[in-house]
Image (tube, rainbow, N blue to C red; front, side, top):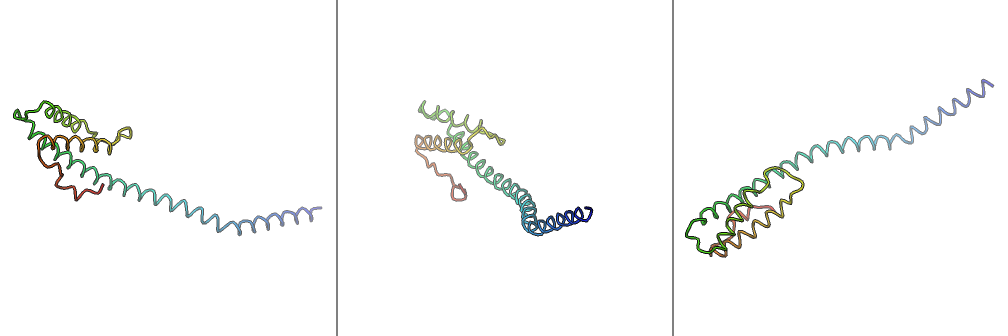
Length: 139
């Protein structure tokens, strides 16, 4: 009886050994996938940070340009009340533009709205609305 028990234990060990051999490639693949995923995630976060930083700088420069133009034309000689209202509205939109990453704010939508208002103002002032650095923007 002890001989039969020893034989079953040996068979189980052999079966486990064979299973480990057959599963070794899959286990190694899974382990390396997890390592690669973690490395890629950390590198991707760094790259995304730099991309976001540069895009934010570009948007900031564009908004600064718009702000300088409207401040220049916000003088008493601006005749139209509608134009004064548009300039004041655009100034508030630029001043209230988020300065930190808020997931609840549609940044691209806000920039599009600001660009649209700026074009309206430029049409009223009969000046060019083309942003001089627009060829350098990557959007």
